[in-house]
Length: 419
View 1 (cartoon, rainbow, N blue to C red):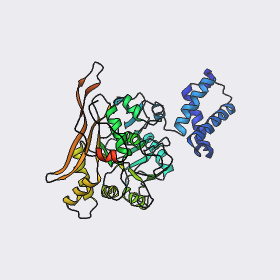
View 2: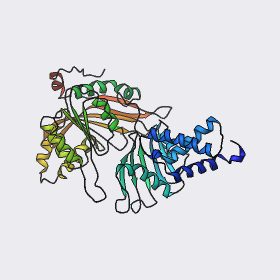
View 3: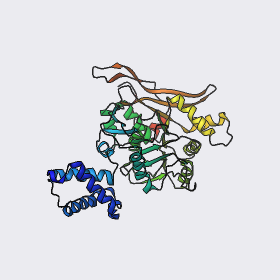
View 4: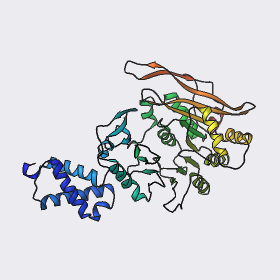
């Protein structure tokens, strides 16, 4: 670039200002790919009008930078283009972190101000009809690529607006890929595949970022292709590689406080849509009761996830969430519902090296005088770290599950043992 045309930064700012001043509607309509294509032509036109000539490589870089700022998320686009980045966390304009390979590290990008953070939030939520302000100081939204954005602003966020973007792999995970990175072991794979095909009701438990949704996507691949699935989520994250799927997403209230549609509302609608199985992205409230009732009334083989620190904690959480339905149910009948509905709990954990693993597969074996009875079928016990800092451990296999006869009666073969 010639010196008379100024530095690259000056040229970028000059072109960006021109485009924003012109406000060509074509730059802000259509798909993300259409917007970037139109922007490229607009940049080329502005350079020709200003009689600026730059090499092709610099032209591509200039278009990318301006495109990121005008129709993208500015400096964050550099992070979102990296397939290894699974999470982006904005604490302050100059304090941005990413998760790479399960580990959190500081990113080498920054934003100009809190105003730019707010502008980025508005750019995501505006087209979705959502809002964020002092009366509604937090929001969840989905980016065009399926990533999930959560934003919270003052007065709830003391040091300014904070944003978290959780990204999902562009390529769907499979049992093979999970086995390759040691998330599951081959014996676990064989059993889980058989359990799903035999229409066992399964809840995946674990902490935040432990891989629950990823595993749920993989388990759904074991469902026979002819079955009709209804998925229900707060924010759509599931990516089922199937044809016969109806995906439902909850909706927050609008600016006037109207139009709220909850997961519980969607569950009730799903029961009237002739589902073979219902998949709830996550249960976190009174919808737990509706899900258990669906499992108990002809929708065997349903799947869901729930935050919990262990299978035993999951049962306590389920009981608490059913109580949130405010139907005046006593603990006894609630536990009976759980015992009758739930077959397996698959617990996921994020270990100290950042890896995600299925650490327990637990069977619900009914109700006793002491409460719900659980039995671990598989358990991964960490024993230490190898020379590369990776967690190593051993897989413990329990006694044959009580559900083995049910699996075999469904025509699904599964071996049981330590090999």
